[in-house]
Length: 204
Image (cartoon, rainbow, N blue to C red; front, top):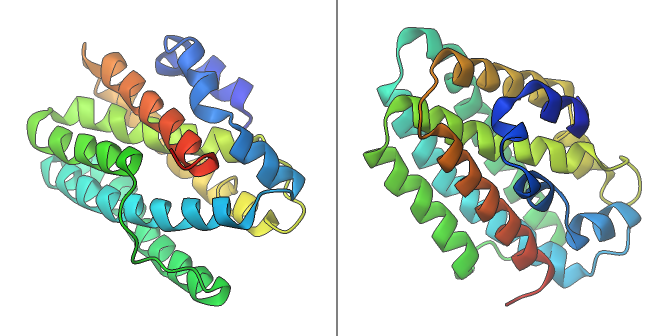
């Protein structure tokens, strides 16, 4: 699933305008794809994304608790995949000698706080749009890269068929459960994604 196909298929993406491009393209990703990413930038991204994944786990668990039966299969599968991803992060960090016990960067803290606050204050339909925003923007960002070079494994992981199918299932749920506030919160996710990539590239 290419970024262009995603944008054509999703009203949330189409209506996000320029925010979509800003959330799915960055110098960090360009350098990663070219194999020229500085080691300190990669270490910063890995440790901060690990902290983000911890917060996302809380968000997804709270979303699942609110969800009706017809949402359970993709949401439960997503939580299981996220748990596997945490193990994957830990294994790579140990191999590369990257310390995951770091202080959250402000960009990471603001993003995670947004997710947790939303989980307690927003209705199910909006939470589905938020989760879709997190995952579809991530899929688009990695799918635009050619899986080669020293970071090929990372590119392949987040552009895989399994991940594409999961994101498509989330997209279906957002269409099944629309909400007038969905676009606003989807756009908020894209702003946070944009800032997270900036943080990964330059330590503000």
